[in-house]
Amino acid sequence: MMTVLLLCAVGAFLELDTTYAFQLTFSRGIIAGPLLGLLCGDVLTGLQIGIFTELLFIDMNPLGGMLPPSATVCCTLCLALCTLHIPVYFAFFFGVIGSILFSTAEIYMRKQRSNWVARQENLIRQRPAYLGSVIRQALACACIFTFVFMLVFAGLIGPAFAKLVPHLPEQLHAAGKFAYMAVPWIGLTTLISAFRLKTR
Image 1 (cartoon, rainbow, N blue to C red):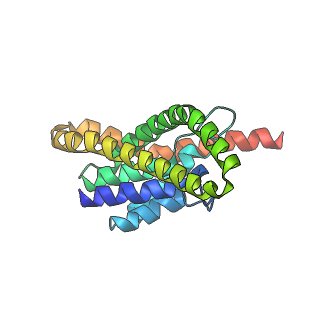
Image 2 (image 1 turned 135 degrees about the vertical axis):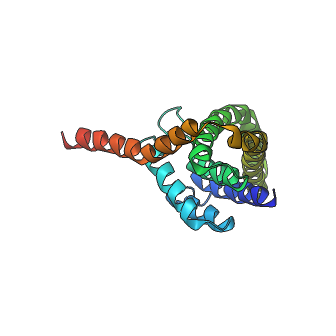
Image 3 (image 1 turned 90 degrees about the vertical axis):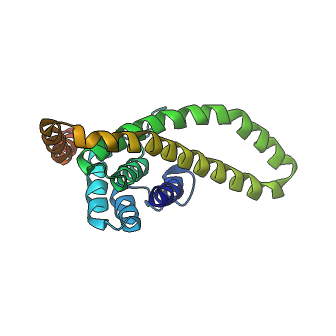
């Protein structure tokens, strides 16, 4: 369980790179996956998950009111579930579901935060020195929210599904493996259609 806590903490910190801070691409699946894999002692699985996540989400852009699923949350949840002895071909799809739910929760949180932001802007106008404190509060709140979301999701899904895995029929395992290995091809298919549109 300590590994899950560590993964969720580091994953929450890396998620800040998506929009809140740094902007150094640490939140991309291709980078976050191996980094998180290093923490749980399986860099190759982390790299594979990162590549699959990158290919699956590569064509989703934050345009208008759309917030794409988080690659970092997907990688973190997937590796956290793997440490709870859930096969990667099942863990990955739980990670994808978790990242989609996270983006929905993030949209809701941003809407709720709009009043807080307006109040903080007024305070900063009155006291410009307050800016640093506001930034620290915003980053801490975003990091804590992400950490709690991932920890709760992994805590609810992980132990329950880990007990269920040995009792699943072999056909379901085979279907999970096949679906998992199809992920990069699905991602590449979306890239082909995107390139075709750009070359017309």
